[in-house]
Image (tube, rainbow, N blue to C red; front, top):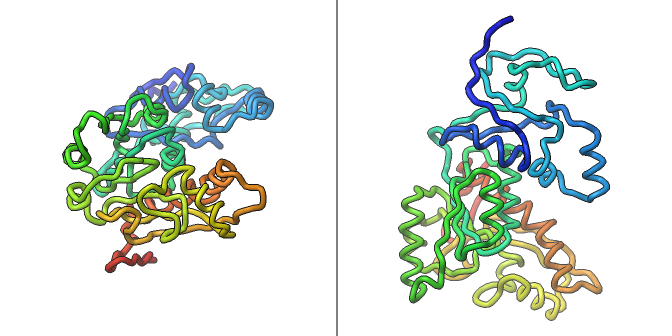
Length: 314
């Protein structure tokens, strides 16, 4: 029997792939799981269907039929496991399923700012897992208050989470200075507001010109600016009687929601909509699609800023 050098082993128990695989990786590495090449027992499809459980939550809870992940040299590839038994591949089966990728030169460091549940952060994490953000890597998540669920989402992906609590600072100026220093320490190439509800002043903007972007739940220049956040936006939309709303990704400037627009997408406002129903439609059909796309464009150097306008390069 041929010998093979084993670099790392991960026992896939509670926490599934998302929590267990990162534990076997050194700093500066991540793993890409090619799900279509993994053996998955039919019982997990039944659990997902009957329990109405999202795919990501399944892989974050169960091993999906894969009890062990072994990292070996990419050259040590052999046959796949027998689909009927899941056996026969041996430890050198796994290079087809797990690639270790170095966050090397040229990879932009993305720092995400959050204040709550982190649904937009999750959209970014999922896009990153699918390989849809080439040239960039989320390296840190910073929350404006402790205990928010967004930090748990980051931890599940092995991404460091930090808290810079707003109420620990006497005013916005002091908080902005602290945030600027933290972002500089993180060597951020791109700062993404993903449901971050604290306005930062020019100290941060001046330190990261053209390197900060925000997702706003309306079609700027409508329903934006001070006081327009969360459900307040959708309440205003419904009260106005407009027939279309949507989301906007824009660069952050010193003026609230006034930076160059990167991308927009519209959805209809329907008869009988409540603020909550409309918010969900905007998130699912606009925000969760636009933000990862905009981040990917930035990481590939495909956004050109001229004045207060942007141009998407081929």
